[in-house]
Image (cartoon, rainbow, N blue to C red; front, side):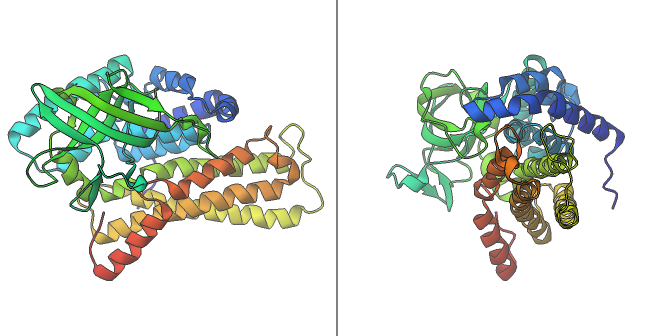
Length: 406
């Protein structure tokens, strides 16, 4: 297997790494401290064409797929993990409209209409640099009586068909890019008769649409610059062409794109690499104020080697999983994806914690980024759809049943 990036991918990796080092990293501490969204980072992504990374070339984009997205996101995270995490949501929305839906069954009429609607949206991204968020998380944990549990899937947000479009009502939480995205790709369930899959919708809700509000404080442990507040949709009207994918397609994709849940993992891979790189600079005395190597260097050296081994093992497994992302994965491919995702979730915490231990007491001060890296790393295990407990549960359940699962 050849895991070496091609020439085009390497150019984009180098660009993302340069942006991370020169632009994103110097701003990251301020945005973390203030829990503010890094609009400047997105201006840079826009200027250098990375917002259109996964937009087809014929519509003004760079025409790259999930594999290249993962390589680029890994580099962005080395500068600011919050920026990489929100970049994930924008990029996977572009992929949902493109290469992912290409493998989903639909009528020729629906496919032709989708091509027209998607072309308009892609062109807007390419020419205006608009950004998409993904408010997928539903407040079903609150026990509210108005939640719909249909077909085993959770859709708390509903839509009513009206002349010319839909009226949406619902509540979302952990909505990254709150107030910062131009559109929010929002799952909803169409009220009415019919099976639940045919009634699933995926609608682009404009930030400034009447009835859209963002609320709640945002003062979390880590990933503070994602600004992931609550979103309320109260009788929000969107036109028919707000369909990111045709009606019913989101439900069919839900079950056939399980391996795409690794899309968060490149962020945390880049984060652990940033922690390792900074730790090396620190103990070698290359960071202002760091003491450099001292008498305990041999003991530290073993720990450094172990960190390297863990990072490279996680990277190899994740790259394998990324190479297998496609519509309709096999059971083995799903299990590799789950293994990769959980391995990254575990390893990023271990590496960031070990980097602090190796560097010593001064490394926990906020003038060093290691304590921020560690706090950001803790988010890996609790992020849906593959929170660590969920991915682990699905892995053993699928092993016992022989069923792919979602």
